[in-house]
Image (cartoon, rainbow, N blue to C red; front, side, top):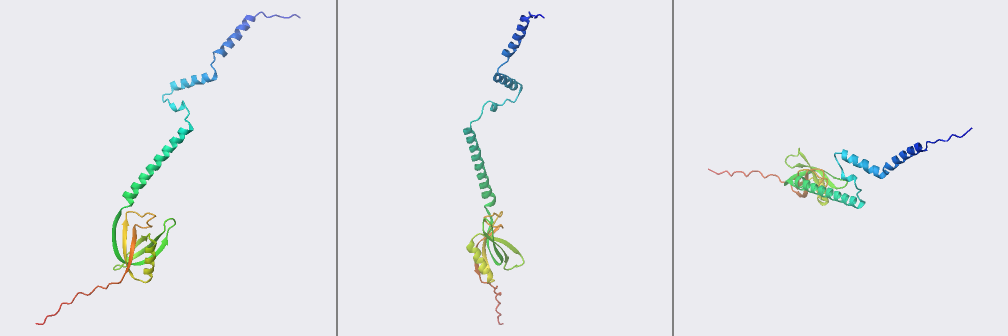
Length: 193
């Protein structure tokens, strides 16, 4: 048996050179990624600069602080507007002579006395009221036990707020008064003729 010698070395070298050229002509992975990114950017109409860099943590913190500051500032302004314009103004203020029908202390966060009174002349209609001052509430409770008439000074607001009690009517002062019976009309003196 004899060895067969292949004289096609030149042909083999050409094949190896072609494969080597393919490897050399191919870009490095980083350059290939950049080329693909540029192709995507050219094809993509809404080009976004945020993809080009990473925001440092200090800038993110500052951005979050600014957002938090403005959110708190807007919340304070809205709360102040609602409190002053919508809820803070009194609708009316006055005094009434009435009997205290019921009174109880209520509240979880804001304590108040809640009760009902009836007008002296028309005892059928009951009006609910709130008292935020503890001294006034205890005074009304003591006078209520004696079945006396109270002179109640009140303010009526547009809306009930938790720190003012559960009702729109807030009694801020109470005073016990004597029952006044109306004097009969004076009689005309008869003249002698």
